[in-house]
Length: 276
Image 1: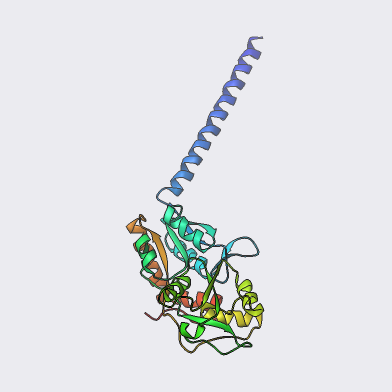
Image 2: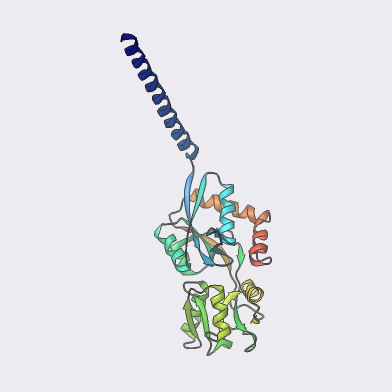
C-alpha cells in the first residue's frame, strides 16, 4: 500500500512538473510574439474600395489598384510600421482621415484650399491629374473650355477637385451648365454619357483612355486641360512627423527607382508620373 501511495505521489509530481513546464513555455512563446511586434506601429490607411484603377476590391476581395500598391510598397520598405487599409467612397475616405480613423489617405488627392486647411499633403506627387472635359465624340465635337460647355449636364464625383473647380466657375458664370453629382463607377459614368443622362464628365486623359480601351466608346477630350494638377497622399494633421518623413522619403525613392512608373504603366496604361 505504501509503495502504491509513493507511486501515486511521484506520478502526481511528474504531471505537475510537465504542466508547469508547458505553461511556462506557453508564456515564453507569448512574450516572444509580443517582442517580435515590439517597436512596430500599426498605421491605418484610408483608401477607396470601388474606384478602378486606383483603389478597389479585386476578385479575391482584397484591396488593389495603383494607390493601394503604392502604399504597400512603402509599407514593405518601412519595417517599423504596419499599414492596415480601410475602404470607402471618396467622401468617406476624407472623413475617415479627418476623424482620425486613419492617419494616411491615398485616393488621388489633388490640392485645393479646403483640404489644405484640414490635412497635411505629402511632398511627392505621384500622378499627373490635368483635367479635361470628356464628351461623346459620336454626339458632337470635343470641348476645350467651360465656356464651350454652356447648357451641358456634367457629371462630377462628390467631393472631388473636379467638382470644386466646376463649382468655382459657376460662381462667376451662374447657370452656365448643370452639375450632376454622384459616386459612379467607371462603367456607370460611361453609360451615363452614352445614354445622354449627362453630356460630359471631368477627368484626366488616362481615365478617358481607359474608357475607350475598356468600353469601346468614342469619347473625346479637348486639346487643352481646364485645370493642371497632380495627385498626392494626405496625412491627418496629427500624424507623427517621423511617419510623414519616412513615407515622403520612401515615395521619393519609389519615384527615382522606377517603381511609380511601373505602377503607372500597369494600372493606367502609360507614363503618367509627374516629371517634377
